[in-house]
Length: 220
Image 1: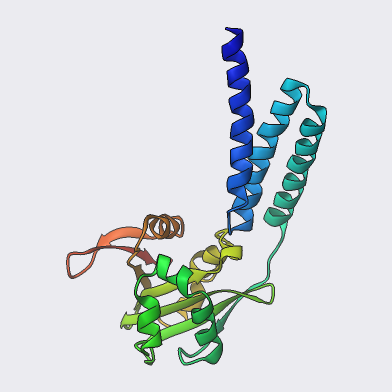
Image 2: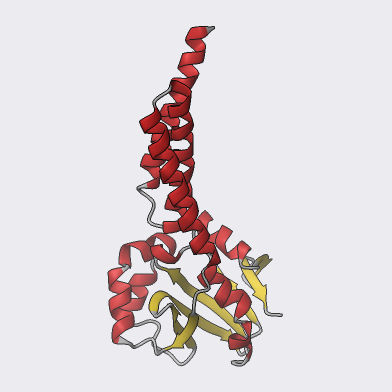
């Protein structure tokens, strides 16, 4: 019985260490903070249980630091703005080149189409998402009807994948689309993460005219 008890305690230590290690691989600051907080809290508990006070208090301190920073992240009022641009834009070219690998993970084939100049038409709406004076992401949509926009790409850089940017586009700034006569947005998610993201943004499953399942949002 005693051996099993010590084995459980040992695994608690391993678990805390593993979560802390995984947190350091996160590109999203928010995910890093949450995982690091969880791992540090577990490892701090482990330290108190085995009587290793330096381990316990150090990780308790790390836990409190993460709580402090997460409070700052969630309470901070960010300045967000849409900056409409042409698809032929030198900064946009640089942005796409710089985040090429990440873009291909979420939007397979998009980068190649963009570089082959398949998006240089008046039918495309393109803008950068500005967050606290930094470029947080890029959006390109194609008009398939006068009031219907197909989302080709809605990409946020790793540092800003905390849903604030998405909520600004799809929830708090619907008037931007309405003023352009757009009433519906449709997207074709290429992976589970993108699907879950769109669902959180208020998109629902529908069948298009080719009998294909896509996600669509009707603007209120």
